[in-house]
Amino acid sequence: MSFDGLLPRPVRVTPAPGTLVVDEPPEPATTTDDSLPSEGFRLTLGPGGVRVAAADAAGEFYARQALRQLLGPSAFRAADIHSGPRALPCGEVEDWPRFRWRGCLLDVARHFMPKAGVLRFLDLMAAHRLNVLHLHLTDDQGWRVEVPEFPRLTEVGAWRAGSWVGRPPDGTAEHDGRPHGGFYTVDDLREIVAYAADRHITVVPEVDVPGHSQAAIAAYPWLGVTGLPLEVLTRWGVNENVLAMTDRTVDFYRRVLTHVAEIFPSEVICVGGDEVPTTQWAADPGTVARAAELGLSDVDCLRGWFLGRLVAHLESLGRRAMAWDDAGPLPRSTVIGAWLSTEALAAGHDLVLCPEEHVYLDHRQSDHPDEPVPVGYLRTLADVYAYEPLAAPGVLGAQAQVWTEHLDSTRRVDYAAFPRLAAFAEVVWSRHARDYAEFEARLVRHHLPRLDALGVEYRPLNGPRPWQMRPGVPGRIRHL
Image (cartoon, rainbow, N blue to C red; front, side, top):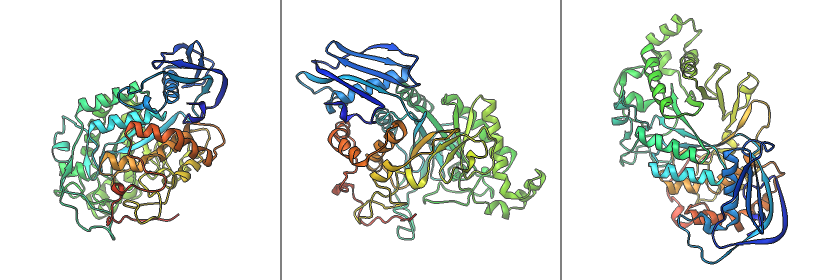
């Protein structure tokens, strides 16, 4: 193994003569070096052993990840099956991240991922030095977080009768009749948070309101505008069933967010705010009167009013709200997930860059007919590697998105996420000028064997394996 195979590519490598031969993975001697940037490290390998100087605990962790890569793919297996001595190159690696927020959104609302799958995904993130898991816990199609005060959220809201196959107009108009569901208990979520923290990953929970809320309305119909019973949604896309703009609804979600804040120590908690049709509000006399009573110019302003109440509540808990960039005007303290534009930066918001056209990893990876459930924009491995995040004051970093409408298992998540997530990880960590040909050669020779050892069913660079195809399941293709 040589320093040439490290991923993400480090800031600086200084090779030295000689080889370090070890019978067992070496335990580095570690020290703190305050001169290094946050999360930075200096990994030194010499004939006498391995030393790590780190800015902080995260830096030491990332140094150990780099050493793990130098030990070869077998170091990524769950049990040590290597026999014989290992030869490590001598030299020094200095490295630190480009952005402080290096995230990935995992949507467990559309298709539930059992706890073991989330823990595994955290391991994969840690191996790529990603440090924020944005966990999308609620949506029209499912509510995944236990709230003991409101048990019907999981008794009813965590289960749906089936799921769309593909995406109309080409996919099925009805669902598949296969019940789907699941949720995380409070202890499950505490375990996920602790497991992530051990890997220097922050879990940012999302409770999406006031749209994307039909699962909650199915549990408690009074949360909806009409008050009529609804089922947990079985189709994908934007949905007109939104929350009622009442004080009772505000109080309900304040209590939910208080509970969420007790589980998740993250400074940031996401309240969504995206894709909120106002059709029901405009048609409901009570909602129209409510907007007038609040002094709002029209019902469209109710979204900002509602979200503003929740932003203030989170701040009263010592937390900071995050919302998507189509949520409308919000307090400047709100972190904005910029999936459509970076306009919120000019309004004084901190931004996390999440551009749909670049880093939505559920989008198709080729135009070949064998590409499974082809949705969204064409985004190849090379396209993701070419993404250049805006580096400006107020930009906290960037995150890739793994939406799961069409990813119904960990195998399908593996296929969509990897190796594109490895490319994204290098984009948000490394500062060097990028050369895709060099990256691809390094990926194929060194990093794909690591993913193989980890058991990741990634998409081969030349196309899907036969069992990764989904013949006859059409998606919805979009073009830039």
